Amino acid sequence: MTEQLFPEPTVRILIFNPRGEMLLTKSHKWNGKYVIPGGHIELGESAIETAHREIREETGLEIRDLEFMRWQEFIYDEQFWKPRHFIFFAFTAKLDKGEVVLNDEAEEFIWIDPQSALKELDVDSYTMACIQTYLDRV
Image (tube, rainbow, N blue to C red; front, side, top):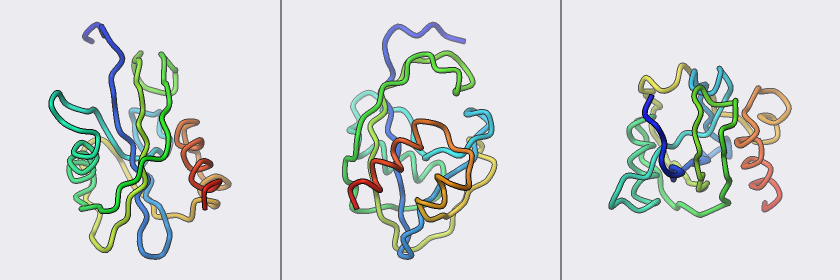
């Protein structure tokens, strides 16, 4: 494991299909909890570019209409599989169509209503906060 010298900026994206369901993935990196897909912002890449790239890499989907939702600090939280300091930039996005094809960062996925996700799924606390922020705005 490499020593981390600075916080790592990342994006997370709540993707909504035409039925109003959002996409969550179950990840071994988050101890089997459901999370919002996303990833690290690379040097020279904007957060918006990162969102499109990460979603394409992790799910095979093409998203549109990204809107910034909130930011979060993650400082050595045990919910993640290794000690890290992240800064999360969370967005919402829309999906017109497409089939989810997961890469090796997730084991399964679900399309689910946001309210149901909070009641029925084991989601990490950062995802839970993002879902709640979204629900407070609609």
